[in-house]
Picture 1 (cartoon, helix red, strand yellow):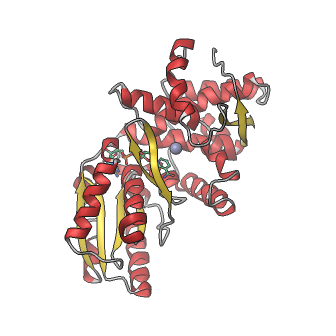
Picture 2 (cartoon, rainbow, N blue to C red):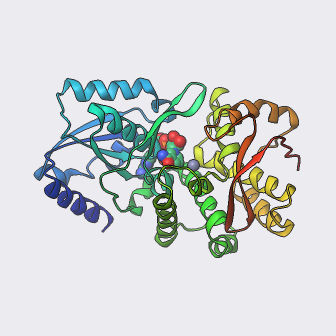
Length: 334
Ligand SMILES: NC(=O)c1ccc[n+]([C@@H]2O[C@H](COP(=O)([O-])OP(=O)(O)OC[C@H]3O[C@@H](n4cnc5c(N)ncnc54)[C@H](O)[C@@H]3O)[C@@H](O)[C@H]2O)c1
Ligand SMILES: [Zn+2]
């Protein structure tokens, strides 16, 4: 059902927009598991495929250059359509290439990870990493068409990938739905990711993005867990012990909930519920004062900081976020 709906939407879109040339951008793992997914398209448009090495290291300006060169060597013009088929890495990189090649070509994301379905594939943020900064270069450039999430693609996703998406998913519950968080807490094991959960996250993000497409205010609520999360992710990558984005976010959710409680925004009983839940499903590293010193430079690098203060999204209850809290001093001892 999911696949045929995706293909059908694409074919209708291509017909309507008179699109004849499509380049599928994907990575090796996705191609191995779902290489035939778009076979039905070739009866309608000319389909080409570019397969990248998997992993966050591929999300670089170097790879972007390789994709630009590939498109140029094959003499693709402004009318080519880029179809990003993969997780957040492929969606971010492909969106960035689409926004810049010949000053912008049309594209869509067909997400294959939980994280990409509920986050990376929505909202138009594209980009690549710099060696010292996650997502250091990027654009806001919206896909031509928003494709439906096909949950059947997740069947081949390794458990770590699912857990990473789950971290981002818990974020949506903490900033947007106490009811959803309550449901998640009912299960002692890893909860089943239902289609309705995915739909809730997609609708929530789309609604926020619609109200603040340029990421000026409301959209900052989506950054809950991400100031610490990005720092932990960047630090781990620097140490050559990379951790998945959503897992770093889950760790960030823990510390930013703790911060919310320490600053008196979040009631203690809510903090305890969150801490119990997150420690049940994720490994939460201890952040000693020495470790915090190492993370601070990464947090200070954050694009949302101004004048030496750190910008955080905090929560004042489960299901409700307060964006743009400026903090000049940090303590996260438990
Ligand atoms: N643009 C945004 O708004 C936004 C939001 C959140 C995250 N992101 C970015 O997303 C990236 C992380 O995305 P991710 O967690 O999807 O990682 P990913 O794209 O690197 O995918 C994780 C792994 O799963 C494999 N994989 C993907 N789909 C598969 C499938 N269906 N079956 C089997 N294997 C599969 C990939 O090859 C890869 O090895 C980060 O770069 C992050 O910065 C962007
Ligand atoms: Zn994220």
